[in-house]
Length: 393
Image 1: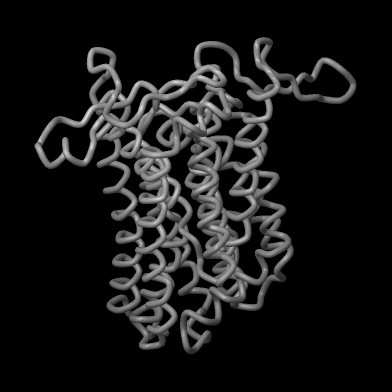
Image 2: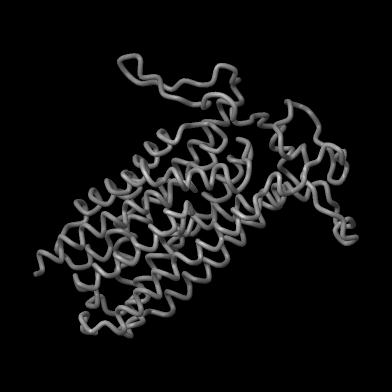
């Protein structure tokens, strides 16, 4: 019976890893794909590689933390309960991925494990409280930092970078496989500044993929590792392989949502979003908090879109109740050295409405699902462990 449960647990862990790949690829490489810098295939390849590097290096420490600190007695991690925990994590993430919304794997996993601890009276409330506080504060920081950048600094950054994703043609960065060894190729009309910007946004996506591997591999394998039946390295290999499958399949939905549907991201905006969200994630990881970079990246995109949409409106206009419109100068990549207009001085006849940049319906769907998915995992796990007698708690 134990061997059967172990096999079932591994299968469910693979299912969780598959959905982690689908949920985390969008926030990491959605800006690069949305700006038409790289293809979805290249995004999936880079995500798989750098996720594994993060998982195999720093990931083991996070696995130990998630399995030891959140509950007082690790004896509650029986093989039977672990299968149930992983089932709720994977099932909830699948709901979000199917809807094309990249839900937070950290929130979903911590919710299921916390539900097990709460149902058995072993939950460490102090640790959970610290995690939840940062989950609330971090996305707010991302939104406001991105909003300030979008309103006050984006045109200046855009003029400095002077690039825009090649949205109508081929991707800016492709792989040439015609020779003995594959090599990178860049768009025919791309200059040195555009190439540099493209490499920057891809490099930051790789950094976010690495960060995801350091924290999210624990969400798939920590409960199984806690039983002591399988060593750490084989579990990381299995989990990373499952993540890679998710990157190449279901992640296409989240790449579309994060790269195209929420806001129309030029490459400059993609760089801004990646820098802000990855910086916050690294800061949280440094202090030992399981980072929900899915939510942080999404709120950074929303904040940047909001900030850019308010550039034509001064504070006095807002008090007077005038309609907010989008700054054309904040939407396009100006020529090098061109001066962007001051806030409130753009020509009204050339200014589209805010909805032309920012899709309210897509944003509402993303925010809703990113809260619903962890709730499904948490509530489902608690009801199961509290009222189903098979678990014996």
